Length: 128
Figure 1: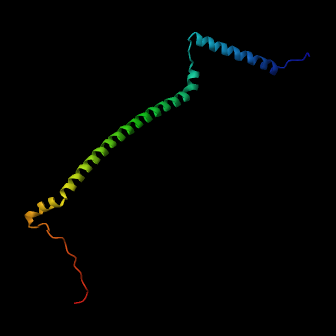
Figure 2: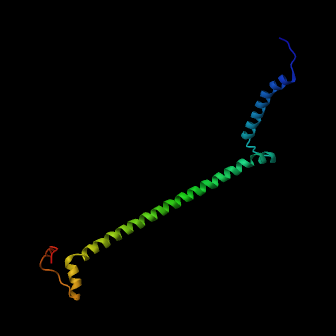
């Protein structure tokens, strides 16, 4: 049962004690609102902070872009509705203008009159 303790075993036994001591010190610092950071800690966290800043910038850009896309879509939908109503009104006007009675009134000044008899079929026998 008795044996000689080597340095590795003694440091292994001290490591958990050291970890618990660091944890309790950290908890005490948070409880006291002591957030003092030394320059070495700032330099080690700098890449992560830059990464977070880039993510925030990308998030803001994405939200602005999506809102612009929604505004453009609404604008195009309104334009399509306006064009559709214009198309329908022009089509109804054209239908009214192409009635036989309206066409006859417009062609009367040129001397072209409406036929009173129905058209007849012309047949050709091919022999002269």
